[in-house]
Length: 510
Image (cartoon, rainbow, N blue to C red; front, side, top):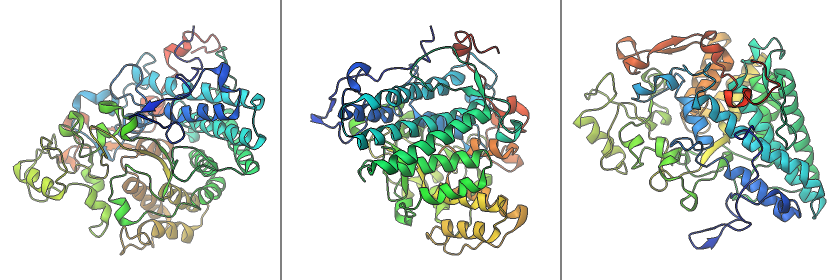
């Protein structure tokens, strides 16, 4: 029985209460069993709401496995090159050593998590047409479920399939393509088949969003809408080097989401603002306590994972940020103060300096050189909304797509729109061309999107080499976490199909 991977019907009753008030209409919740959920479109809306709830839950009875935040931190940042933390005991996660271990919990988790959302989205897609309610509501609900499914398959492909340039134009393996609410045995589909289905889901979703005439409430950033479909499309297209489509969709995705101000940039990345296209709900009425993403990265958290091991930008990337760029202020410059060059732990002077800059640091928090002040909890121990897509990423996708389409001036203007026009660095201008321009785009992706779960995924699709050095060799990784990882290493940065799928799915032969 494929218990861990079969579609899981969303749980709980139609009404869920928190802090003494009903909040189903305003926050994501789990919903009802399949028998009643599709009787009406009103009930089906709760099922879609439940898909959002699945993105912020504890999983596999492990602290730290908390939905989408885990993917960002453990899979997107820890194994990357721009992010470091004094956790030498995590060398297998940080060093990408589990990719070919089909029995590892870290191999199982994304598969379990994303297929659970896919299974429930499939139930909505299959059942919504028979629900009682207006056709335009059915269209909108189906579009939302298709958007979730497309997003989850994109994430699975980035983890469990080779980078596009290694797929022989999509002929190599992808993932199991489940499109029905069943747990039947199915083979692994070719990469091009899976990506074609993602495109189809998004095309269908966009068509249904448009014909429905509906949109989400502006306060419900955790809900998916047509703009989220555009954003997923843009990220998918850039992942498979479909640059014209990436450019088209990125422009559409950010059309209604102007860039955030400097003040908003410095506000803590924990509450949606005008730039956020889609986020994971995270407020005090639905907290995961010490399991939440912000209990691991929010600089002011009282969780030991933050107080003892603050998350830090690498010295090599920090030193590339111009002094006139406000994004440099999001990290603790050790200046000439003492700090342990192996662990990052600062001395008394650096700690005093950190508390002067950010007095809301928890009283017993350590100060580490280059620790982040970008992410801030809005409540203890780790409460905050998690961003999935924002306009800055879309601009960076446009810059990259324009570069590969030989639109040099347009690529330069995208970087200036991101950095100069927003006030992040009023002195910035881009005149670089050729390979230097591509490196500039990559660098500013690293700076702008630091900590948001992109680093490892970006370097995988680019086929870049990861270079992690200690202080003596020009960076700030712990001695036990250093190394060089080439694009062909670590199973080409590709996680294997978990044993808990292959043992029970007779159509998988490896």
